[in-house]
Amino acid sequence: MRALGEIIEASKSGERPDYDELRLAVCAMDALMSFDRMAIWKLAEGEAEGKKPFMVWSAVFQRQENFDRVKRAMAKTPREYLGENYDPDSPAVQERRRASIAMMEKFIDKAKEVV
Image 1: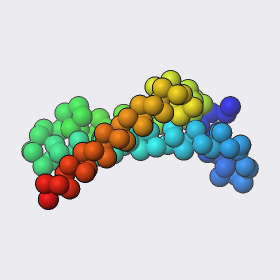
Image 2: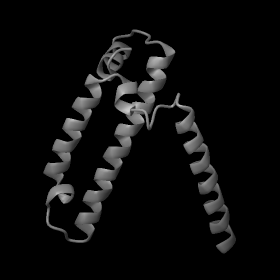
Image 3: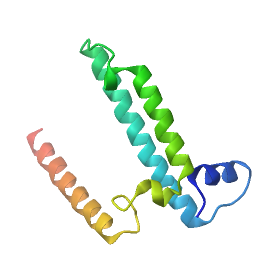
């Protein structure tokens, strides 16, 4: 399997990467988006609370973290980047997802009862 960056470049160049490359690339990009979302929320929280720009509260720090994270991800295959704890082909990962979804649905149902 090609590195994530190679899959993206191939797609942008009109190639048609195989199904598994694309499926795992989507999962890897979702993980990258999650990190970015957490960073933006941390920056907004810091700004709202008047925190000094230091480490996770610093836009400069978060920019460098983002650059390094994306650079590492682009050099690895999507499966390598995801690792065994987030590999969608792992039965353990799928079982954990089912349990998490069921727990969240129960939480939502209870929240609806309160309203």
